[in-house]
Length: 536
Image (tube, rainbow, N blue to C red; front, side, top):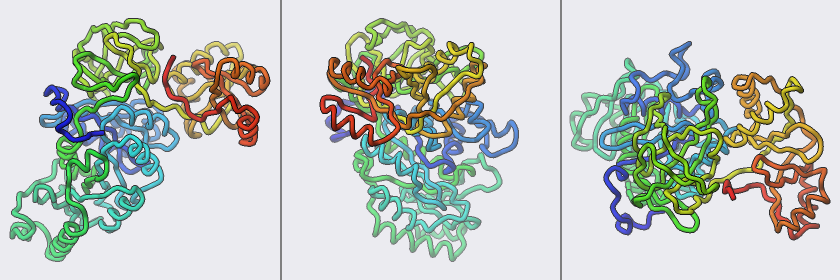
């Protein structure tokens, strides 16, 4: 990803101060709370809405869909921009629930680094591992935050060992916890030789910081009880001997992750993590594209759509395409070429997201994420440029693992249902297949919870009650091959053929055996469980 810092030209200062990153974690590790505290310290919000608090107070600022508010999970990845010190942070929130992994995978194509949140008691959990593997495929630098240290948590060395073993990445401690659970006092900042003390009384208060001359400083004894102090000295000495030192280049290359220990709900350790992101996470990186890579310092503006969100504002049936700027200095009102359709688009009301508030973006730079309201012209995977025909590559689309047929409660409203489903398909919330035979639609998702989300959104946003029923099919594969071969295959297998919302041919089947048989009997055809979101 980075050869060496010196090979790349220096970026314009506005671009160089951008840090665009996502937070990845298992559900319940505290990601939404951490996001809140980032916004709090970035000055974007005055009081962090606590996720589990009662009534209105728990409407956290970064979750805006009704279902997210009811359940306390982040369903759609929202992007937020705020300043912290000299840096501009662009934080892309990823859905933590395992049923929303596809949205998360695509989000990871739009960031330059990831912050991994793990729970001090549970360590590395399955979903974290899956997401980490996607980061690894893209060589994303990872910074780790071990959360909930104020609850009973595991031994620090054990947590570090587990990360090293399960994720095959070296770990270097950026801070070291003092005490655990009820005795958790704070942490020793190993990078700056400082003692950080947690304030349990005020959850929104930044921890008190005491500058020290190393671990032998007599000031330590004034704040840390003797037995905890002895344990701290011993553990830090061991850590310095056994674990690799902090090497900024190894972090950028994705081989080493620095770990901070803290408690997001108590605002503890968050500021140090943010300073770490500023110092260690990369500036905007080149974007993979065909026929050439796009460098952030290029003067001409380009960007790609990694997410489409429909009906963000229920009062207006709008869709917002989230665009990651790959290069240049964007200004409101610019005309950009929509590469797929080759048509110019005037971007007259782009928005920046500041927590749950949107404001007009007068300008944006490479690395920023802006929202472009549109009526369906923009799809996931689309590239916008100042005229050059470049396509950003590598935005994945996965075959759904669960299929159900979908019908409108009122048969007279079938047309409205088609419109609603197509909208969700373009947003990437589900795959929609129209079988060649029979009526109705087959909806495919990656996780069962998505059927609930879709049902409630179709009812809320379109006033259409819908029924999901078991489908005779259990899997879908995209059919690739020469046009004549595909046509011949379609004619011979009409009962199994459907088209997705882009019009591509899909083979629907009940059994893996069917797929194996097709592959054996039709060597000229490829059946694929992914298709790149590249549009003709």
